[in-house]
Length: 339
Image (cartoon, rainbow, N blue to C red):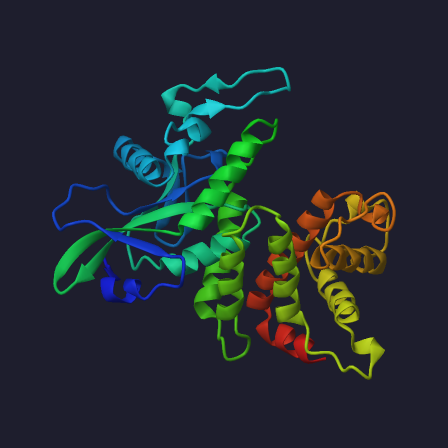
């Protein structure tokens, strides 16, 4: 087993927390706690990336997880998000699940170098939408091995808040993970490991994405941030003397090109048959309303979008797909940005 370097971990981006335990502390084997898995489809475990296995947590991992959550966010320490089933209708009550059905799932680091940064990046843009709450691992420091726990408290708080809010709905936010989901994560992880930032700087993009995850789910600032991320990948500073070079026009044209390459393409079914151009014109009207502090009017000017949820899901999905394509064809995205 290769260990993380403690001194490297200390140089973490703003908002990252690293907790080190004294050498010899009794702790579980290294793992990442995944917040939002409801179950695995047709299997007991999945290799989510090479050498790292997604499975149900064991007794020791559940105990460590509950203690960690309790120390950080006591409101969620009861385990209700993972130990109960939400209502099947508006009149139903929450049901306590048998222990064998609890939804504590972890990614077990079964060998090799635990590249936690690439793991988190891959999961942040993978279609399955899995979220890591914290990562427990082992770091080397001057010949000693230190158990360490890594998390980003604002992101953890916002994720648990969103899950608590959605727990009272029929669908909730938990995901049933398939073999296809795991395959997509592995593919993204592999591309991240090979990506050359000299062609297209994605370190900066992922830094923005992680900072947005610290904000309340689909808050005005987060929504504006998604537009900013999309523009940072696809657009150049417009020529003030050329109205055809405007940011909105660049986004519409470049997304139209990319959307023809995506399988599946962006889902416009919620927009009553509106064209790509019409939808994105209205999306930028939505952005403008938020940026200028006015309430978006989904009855009048923005009726083509239907509601804020439709617009928010579209902009977040466009960002996710664009980042994934930047990993697949970085030179294409670098060229698109210039034109």
